[in-house]
Length: 92
Ligand SMILES: [Zn+2]
Image 1 (cartoon, helix red, strand yellow):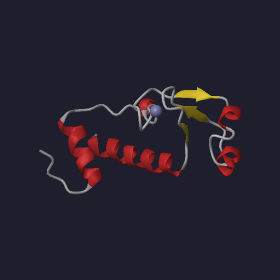
Image 2 (cartoon, rainbow, N blue to C red; image 1 turned 90 degrees about the vertical axis):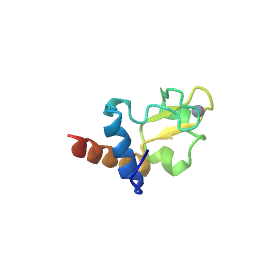
Image 3 (cartoon, rainbow, N blue to C red; image 1 turned 135 degrees about the horizontal axis):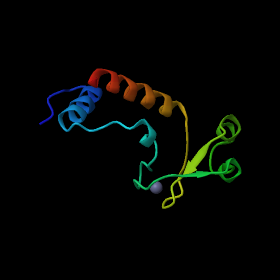
Image 4 (cartoon, rainbow, N blue to C red; image 1 turned 60 degrees about the vertical axis):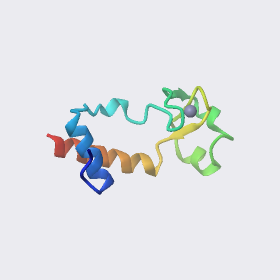
């Protein structure tokens, strides 16, 4: 049973309880909708699939082979990376 109220603390509690290894290399590797492994795509393939300002401001994109959703390292990526780093620090 999860005891914490704060979502970050809940995640920390689950990771600690089940001793789930946090592999930085596997972060952001799956589609949030399908859970399929994302595939790196050429930036040209992202043109038209992402907003223009995203296309022009990012160099790396990946795509879900099932639902075709395109991903990039946006602000969410930075927030999640910092959260995982905090989680790893607190777990050690
Ligand atoms: Zn998908």
